Image 1 (tube, helix red, strand yellow):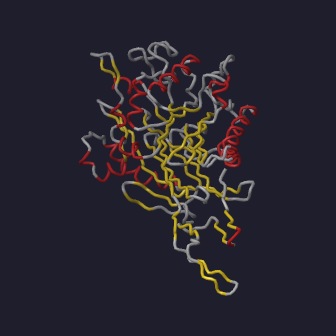
Image 2 (spheres, rainbow, N blue to C red; image 1 turned 90 degrees about the vertical axis):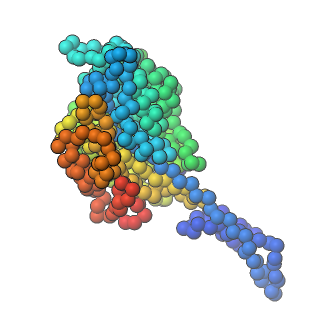
Image 3 (cartoon, rainbow, N blue to C red; image 1 turned 120 degrees about the vertical axis):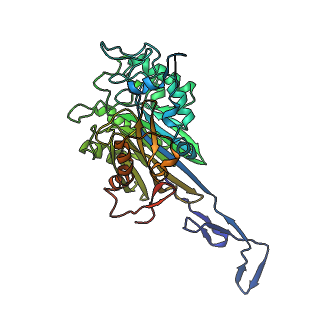
Length: 433
């Protein structure tokens, strides 16, 4: 992975290599003047390097609590519609070349989830603690602009192994790609690799565990889990399998390796020692971007300079937690999240690189009709364009999240990187330390 190409034109002693120039100069042999023993070659043909650029946008936890089910349900038609949840963010989600998120629920089918006595259900579907969401949500997620979902998280087995399989079927029908849960051993060992704007991206999804629900004996491959216990100890075989999968992608010379991992402590604003260790090992194995979820609140960004075995250096990006994207949680900043966009660049004969990170703070709000997500900066600056009935708390959260998001996420990098603000986004360029 991350090769640097050097081309040597021996006959004319011209070396063409990787440089910061945007032009590749090639000699024309149409005109050669002989001056003694020296040939003077006129360079009359210039061919520019081809630059490819791509953006990947990630959001955090996509959850559907009972209150969201209630608002999305139309009893007259016995149908669900969750499109309102994404309507304000759809322009942001669709403008990226590729958009990913964490699906923290199952699509097991009506009355097919785990039933709990005295727990409210809506038309055969349930919220916390065992999520089983109407299949309509998958279509709404796709229509909102999502391309791929990580299905490996602590709620992956909420509807048993059968729910894992049905969830994959529903996602396939909605044309949503997925990583983290699998139908068979062979599928679980494959590395999903896609070409986006002439660059190759590998996607790997993992979770720390499944809320104590054991992996199916007949299908331990069904969820990519580290089986971490309460003390932070992982199943060493599963942990090594995760690192080997990243190394496998690295050996495939993939341009960029993206790891979506569900880990950390809930409602904690900074990563724990186990998260840090996992991130260190993932970067060493070859990961380029690590997207964390599970804490339900934002945790900071870190930017690493990683030296690979061949001596080349590259930038690695981790956001320890993207926070909630959409949910009904309403305490300790669980209504604040971010759209996290990574900008990639590849120029012929140059090493592919990450050039910039962009952030759009988000806020999840609720009223009697809907629970939805707002782009914070745009809504704050042009609230008159949003036909909303925000509570006093939500108005304060809107103002708070505009500055809190960028300040909190910059905690680890503020001494080495700066940000700019434009188009309702915060931008962090990586080439200006």
